Image 1: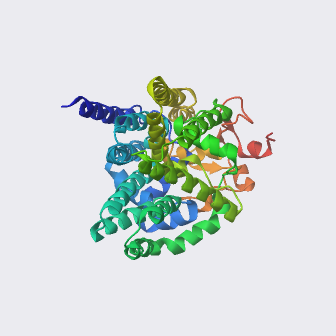
Image 2 (image 1 turned 120 degrees about the vertical axis):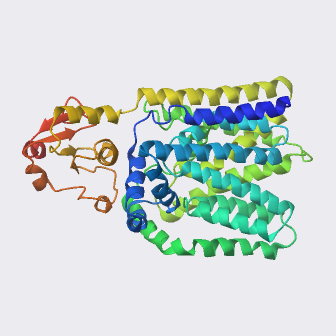
Image 3 (image 1 turned 60 degrees about the vertical axis):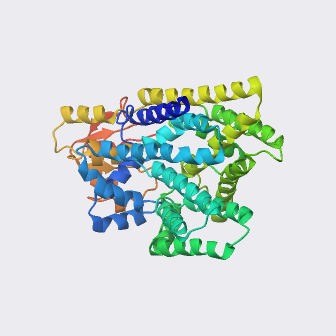
Length: 465
């Protein structure tokens, strides 16, 4: 086996290992628990719950509905599926890197394998790792179509694009980048290309009415409050380079500095690019798939009049950011190029170390919390939550045999009435009738520890800051 091939195999293996490492170490978190609740419901209820509880399309939830029963531990099932999608994304990136950054594919693969942003997505029981995979497959098919048109390839691209739209609504922004690229480079046979959006639209049509329902519900269920400003753009880019979103002790300013440094350095080299650069076309493709989705996200936010963007919603931007940075490093000669490549690898490796360290330092250890409740009280003692963040994980995974009630949903404006099972948020009068209850208080606003015992009447009467 040639050294270059051995390096690629080693990087792929390392990437898979990093996605499997400590896969179930972190506690199930709020959004993952929502996925578990929706996917575990009877199939006839799943689509209704997706429409009323979530802002995403149904594909990931339907896949989880059939996938989770194969595993005795649903936490493992949720995250293993994402890890497998993450491993497949690495494999899908390799041929794309050979097309867009020839001679630099090992470096691109090293960035992706070490990426804390991708590892985080690959260990999160949500839809983002699957979203990344669809984008990489679609980009490869688009380049194949550009090189040689065939109706079979067009049908495959349309099918993958529809699957992406059924996975996340923001996939439409990725398709906008694909359309911008096609308009710029396709010179002949443009009419037949119009068949692709028609096909995608027909495949997506069954969900269109449900999408309108979700858009109407968005203002009620969305917890996003940060507008997509220039500072948020820098945070988004920095987070893709070194994922700090899960670290409670990480200052956002540091992430913005990383984003600013990457943007300024790459833009400086980009402006010095040669007009006859052989790989310029690949770099243009990557830049289009960074700039167009970001601009479209800002336009969408302006149109809706409220924040709608998170970094993970735009995970399909990250591979093209990595590819573009590889092109930039290739433009730097001698020691500067080696220093830039080494610096990026160190940054990405540090992000991965911080990601796993964050799991040990800031994890709430909900499994241990559930065991302490079991050991301290009888099974018929209900659990009252003063904060929504632990509510769904404890109710649907860690302590499902207990009755759980949410006294104060706070800022998490989920459609609590749509949760499968009994009523989610009882009134104060109902809580006051509890003779004794376990109180889960993550913010320690009432008790000195995260759990305490109280009567319902005393709990309703307590004043919280």
